[in-house]
Length: 307
Image 1 (cartoon, rainbow, N blue to C red):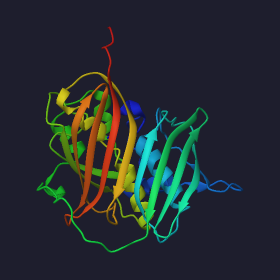
Image 2: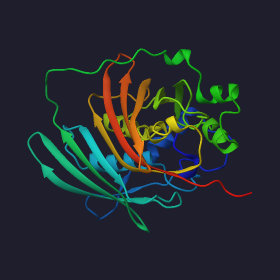
Image 3: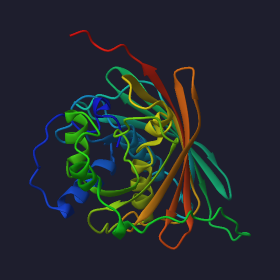
Image 4: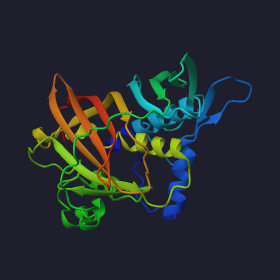
């Protein structure tokens, strides 16, 4: 649910003819970066098949995280990442990832990742890894919301509210993908009047993910860029804008299963100065807080085009 013009998908709207299993397998292939032969801690991330325009930010964050995880000790799962988006990525190009091993301690390890295309560096990411330890637990309780089975899919909501968005947005949100999303209330990009800067939705992959925990965490990182920025725009209603993610942070609190329902609860405390700030919390169906996200992004109002 990033902006259509940001390049999460292109303008093509026909069904791709793939099964849910094939779409999920394609996403896993996209995120699982491959080593560059003969180079230490260097990886290549594939381009999204059929992608047009700018690369979806969650893709670059997830690929950079996978590159970092491939160089970290296996007994230390990632517990946090912090990224800065420097340039818009080009969907027509693969992305190169260089990883620096800045710290290797007894309990923690740190990795720094530089994501590059021909135009230069597009993202910097730092990730921290922590050996599993026992500790006293506390978490904010999960909000009371409807179960995903009782909620419409985004496509079903759009079918019932065809006037909530422009044709490009309608096609963008209706396109089948590797993740199923069920919103509580008005989906992002469908806001026609000012409303509370908050959004909650359930999501999961559309088919089982037969992969180890690192790729499940990469899938959550991929999804963490969904709707954070647009939530901070909801109080302003409908207007023309240019948006771009500026920085992105993510903390993992527990193991995650991306192929089971996860609730993403987002709230924005502030927008102004052509920027917006949002925080998000991920809960599993048992009510466990599994991850927390934060993002600031550019929200630049643009003048309507003259007819």
